[in-house]
Image 1: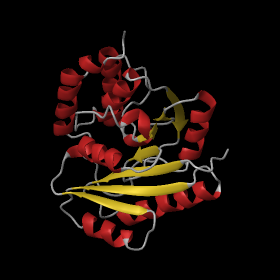
Image 2 (image 1 turned 120 degrees about the vertical axis):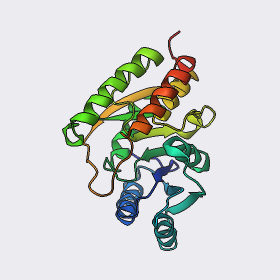
Image 3 (image 1 turned 90 degrees about the vertical axis):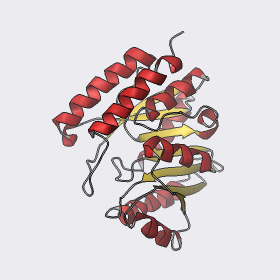
Length: 243
């Protein structure tokens, strides 16, 4: 598989990730080099969105950018939430394709190689990854995810496994004109629904999942759950893909 012109932007949102930022950029940079060497893509950028971090994340990322030709950093003066960070990343991305994942790297960035293969085999605009084994995230998050995925299917009509898993390859032209309004975890479902309503095609692939090893996730906090439920109820019916 090769493409002499295809370009890729890794979009990574960061919020108070000082413990793992350097490792994350190193791993994604290594993947970028490998993808280019294998002719999967011709050009790669790593777009790190610092979402108003209150620790030293901003400084670490800026320092890394002076040494890393792939890395570009965008800063939010104040925290805008996961959706806000991703929206900025998508708008700032300069490549034909976007792969976004969390800054704690829940997936090997080299899954892009398989994801690109899926786009070619099925002429897909979006490849949405799902976790083959979720036992590492704990019972509470597994139950919350099951309930949420069921609610998303019921309200939006999206039949996507693990809709919130942060590992998706997107053709930039298929999503930039239909970016979500939500800043909560509903961002993923809203993004897929809006893109599919606009004619985008989607495929899914299963991937190995790596639980967070440093830092603390706030994605299953009560505030995050409330915000996501609010956006699902407020925006979900308007983006339904049901005819």
